[in-house]
Image (cartoon, rainbow, N blue to C red; front, side, top):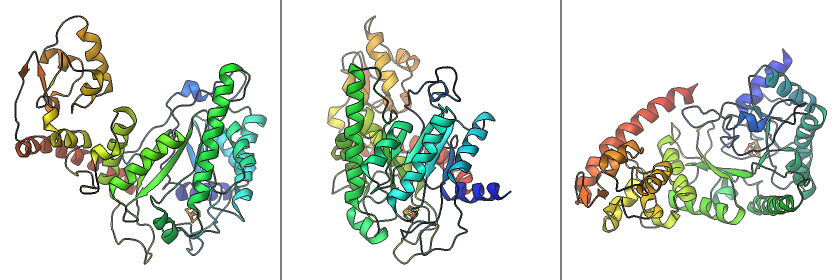
Length: 416
Ligand code: SF4
């Protein structure tokens, strides 16, 4: 019973961390172990508000010596406190895995005593799971900023993914709301992990016996809306992290007003639509060849609430359209609203066998509701609107309906 109470407290305390996707690991079970991250594949599932629900997602403890204003577990707050022992978390993970409740473990923690002490306990959990229980399921550990390189390195051999949360998108925000945290510690951890990931990956190409090091890469989380940074600042930061430290993912977490604090904005609900737009823009940065400065700029620093970022970019760049679908290169096809990665690849492939019609495009998965205004087939439009205001009106209707549906799905789950 005591263990269940701990679980209830520490699982609830972990729910605001959204950076727990389990994709990307190639760890395999040779046959005698327990679990298999690779066979499970993309074993996350998502609640409507993008929070992952397939991992045992808990804190080691919600005691914390830090006092981050936005956090329910901060030192000066007074929630029910609890802490697992290493053996308890290991036991729960193995037990839940065997019952098929979970596909892996996502372990974060408040700071006990200091960064190294806490990190060492988390490493022990991963080590015991791997060595004592031969556990091959997915493990995601939070790296505690400021923990020693030795501990980060040991963690990297046992965890599939390590993440260091930046939380606040600017140093000013960090100093104001999380004064115990240091930007330098966070960036040093990214830098070290990134260099080690590259090193072990390169060595492994030469020597197959080289151990895997953080095979699912590192990630981070940014809180959106607790401090005044614009979407442009947030996207530029994310772009820099992808480029400099090869992060696998940046997660955006709409600020949830769980605390009353004089330094925090007085909002009643998390800015979920903003979070959603940032994920769409992030996708464009990672897979569609966009740069943050193409999507936004200091004069227009917020993503449009009613249009998705690609459609909004296309309307602002109408001089680049229409795109002739039978001649355009892959990169330009990707920029057409309604054409995704898969459909762009299919178009390139299908064009080898003849010129494409609008009907062909539909069959290839192009969303013609949006694409129809931005492309031609054999020199002809399906529908032509070249006035940006009317175009925006025509596309807002569809986009707005979609957002309404998303929010209807998100809010009930979120309130759960
Ligand atoms: S370090 Fe800050 S964000 Fe993390 S648990 Fe402690 S108070 Fe919360």
